Length: 111
Length: 113
Image (cartoon, rainbow over all chains, first blue to last red; front, side, top):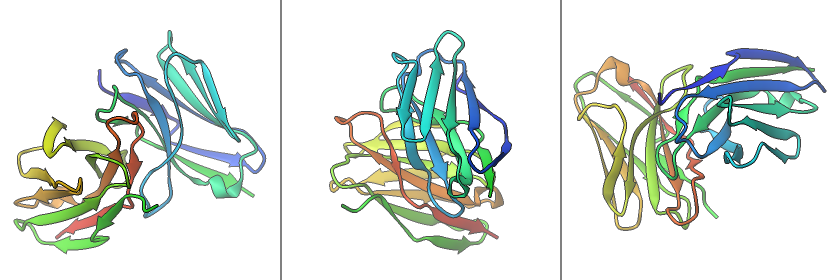
């Protein structure tokens, strides 16, 4: 019940296209859903986060869509650029406690 | 404003040895969490420290222990190292008053031979 399932494992998108990564969770006590971006050899960097009282949050080219009834949330990257090529992790937590991470999606943006 | 810092960046140990990893949180943060990230996997929560006490622990054996100092910095200790302990060890800091956001350091890459 503590798991967060992420898909796809890998994704290839053309430059300028939309990248979409999906996550699903079981524990309805989760109340914070961040997305992290990680480059090889680096620690994860927070991209954008959402709480379950809103259905969508947009920051620049990054948008989180949240479906509370389906217990699913997704990351959309608009106008994808080669510099967006990285591994993306969704996560969930309860208050300030531990983050439960998805398995990660390796995103490649072809120029 | 310095972010989360960790030392050392890389470490090589042999089976059975002990290791200590260090973390300094982001300025203004008082909570430190440790995660283990195996190659190709998402980070797994080890434990969290607040006010020098272990507040929450993940599914890791007692060989993994930690400490938080009065200046909020933290150490992760792993005893009796196993080959399977080879991983990137990440420290994340947050503020107990400021909400849920955890900021990660660059990690320590541990290789156990």
